[in-house]
Length: 235
Image 1 (tube, one colour):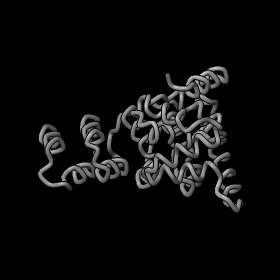
Image 2 (cartoon, rainbow, N blue to C red):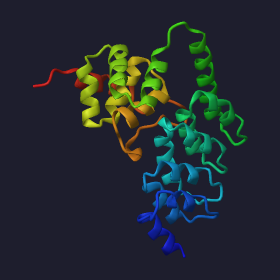
Image 3 (cartoon, helix red, strand yellow):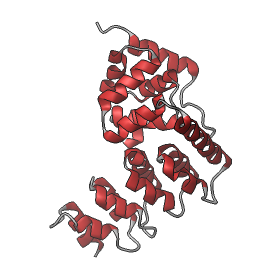
Image 4 (tube, rainbow, N blue to C red):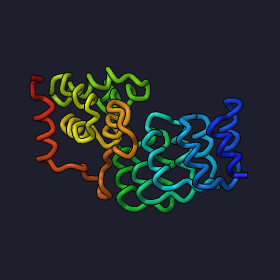
């Protein structure tokens, strides 16, 4: 029964139990929530690859944010059927470069998502042609390694702020602060997501994503104010 499966997810007798459950057909929303909350990366990857699983949109959006540093999850998400426009917009920010074309091939993309993907494809082509890795490439690679110190250094250097300002934003888990620093540094939306989820360690529901039109989630005045606050000397 479902109650039995929920009990197994809560207390798996062997490590592979949750993964096996995640592969079962037609999983309910409650079971999907339990698997997503388990923090079992292999099981969550199997869940995302299970096209018949009924994953709530809120749960799926949280997993998309976490997928920014988990390429196997991204591969499953790109192939997942019936993604909402909001989920597709978030996915367009988080997927690795080699998955952009697969995501762009989905027939239900709206013009804003298509435009965002095209911009990322073009930026990737430019970066590949450059002799030196771009700030965005350095930042993304550091995030995939889990090297938060390198991420902070890239962000501070290109935002022209003291390293302590970036460290303060991370310590406060400030979504607004991370958004403002990425804007100041000239980094794109994917880096902004990584700054919040990896460097700032924000929970998925607290991450600020661009609007449907791709604009920054804060006004220019708000971002300048955040930079000013973060750069103030500690007292």
